[in-house]
Length: 307
Image (cartoon, rainbow, N blue to C red; front, side):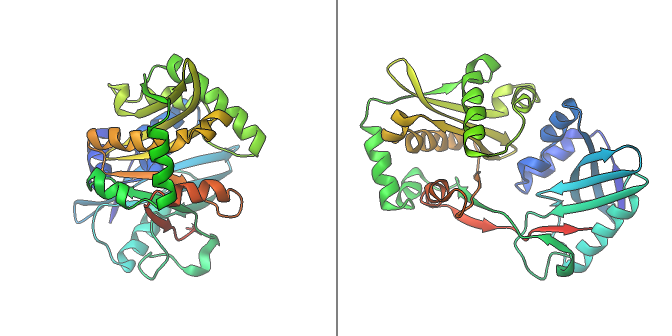
């Protein structure tokens, strides 16, 4: 195996990443956005016998020139069907050739469920895995609605019969700035963390057509916005990133309607998979139930491992 570090073939990266349904954190545009925000990013394409078998994007946090925390989040993205032994070799090759000298703590949170095929020692796991809800968008709208829990579907039906008006937002910053400000206030109130708000402006412009990078939706009652959502698009997948509603929006079940209309729009754009983001049944039980009741597959990842 050999590593090609920081090659500039974004088209190869994007096509490979899209083909296997890579995560947002391993998207080329995600890394480019982090670079624009001053974060060090290292990318590697791993080859075996001349053929690409994996790609991985690392985010670095450095302390001077002697120490760094290196994280591969929701990666590597495996491009071939490697067994555990080959994956172990891949990790060793990446670690050995990593372009950073001095003390470094290297971590990976693979987008795989726990098992014997990870290529990672269970003794090197330092954190349990996060969970998310994944929606398969390749089926029909009828099958998606049939997969919803009855209460979620009833709430959607009620919202569809309400006076809510749903519209797509332009990818221009002025169109969604209000939603990011509401999201920031929501984070403060609930003690939540998320991507820095400047990330969104840069990410939206990361591709020639900003509409290919995001989908923004808003729900209005009259002339007042009562709810909004932002989805970031990466390849043939999308990730739910921002969601907000006020008391009136919650009463009208605006989030149910927004999410359903977003699913319809994403399907129309050829998106095949929607990641609803992390769920925590202890800290945010209501939000977790809301996501799980939509009918997707709950996926719990293996955890965080030292390399």
